[in-house]
Amino acid sequence: MTALPLDGLKIISFEQYGAAPYATMFLADLGADVVKVEGADGDYARKTGPLTLGEADSLYYQCFNLNKRSLILDLKADTDRALLHRLVADSHAVVNNLRGSLPAKLGLDYAALSAVNPRIVCGHISAYGRTGSRADWPGYDFLMQAEAGFMALTGDPGSPPTRVGLSMVDYMTGMMMAFGLVSAIRGAERSGVGMDVDVSLFDAALHQLAYQGTWYLNEGVITPQTPRSAHPSTVPVQLYKTADGWLYICCMNQKFWEILVRLIDRPELGTDPRFADLASRRENRDLLTDVLDAVFMTRTRAEWMQLLQGQIPAAPVESLDGAIDNPFVAEVGMVQDVPHPAGRTLRMFANPLRFDGARLPQRAAPGLDADGPALRGLFEGTQREA
Image 1 (spheres, rainbow, N blue to C red):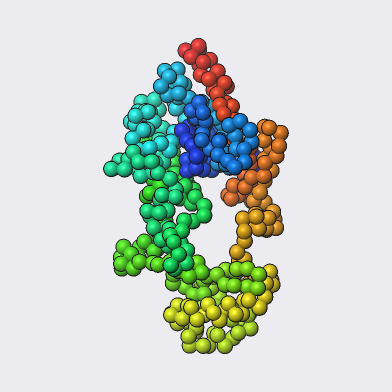
Image 2: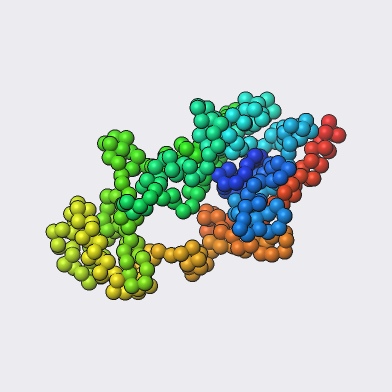
């Protein structure tokens, strides 16, 4: 690939931990020059275990910061603030994931930076937004899963509220910011005027309630926890027991149900009035679970997948290691080798996007202030010429 889609785009990001680094890593993967601004101690992710890569580096940090540059700045120092403004003058966007009121106090919003560059786009990721009664509240993904209803929807009926095992609110918020930021940059190129772009973890989480939330807003329907991680409306879409583990079957329409009963050699289920259509299957979900469990228990997951694959949507439930060691992962190239400056090779997930069929190139996340000397030297040279 000779050129990446965002080649030439320049982003400055005051970021740490998950949501903002995830957003800017996507932009960096796509070719943007992302300068990660850190304090003297660096992004806290650099110290997050359990596995570290030496001083101020960790696998946790690496997985959110590929393809970036690192610069230490102290915005209380006049020289560092002058360097920031020099960078802003030549950049397209400034991103942060600070508490709501801090960007304005630190001069990182459009009101402050537009005097330096009228086209600048200022992206703000916060827990609860930059206005309102919670502007200065700290917040994290897990809290949003609790308050936005995710935990109440997850797990079997009667089980304690359960969080999704991954920080999906962070990642979704990051993707919303990446999309909003590029959209605003496109608008600034056309109009010559930048803007603030805001997204909060809370708003992003609430938006993910999607159809369950819309059912409640319009009809007062409260979706409960469903057994076996089942779809609330469509049956059979849930987990079933096999001889050696769990299998997820996903008959999202009548066609797949009719194919399933044929493949498992139980055609009578297709004409049984208790299971003949979606409404009857939903009414008799528990009974159908028992019937299909008895069928699926007669073979292993691998045997069932051999029979069902490509004909109805089905997947084995894998452990973390089983998911990553799946041969299909290697077949599609979703794990890439990334050389690390310490001399070892890291195995990292590839960006899921492809362009002209090719995966995006990756380089290791930068050491703390790895690009500081060069950036400060460039600034000092500019100052001398002026």
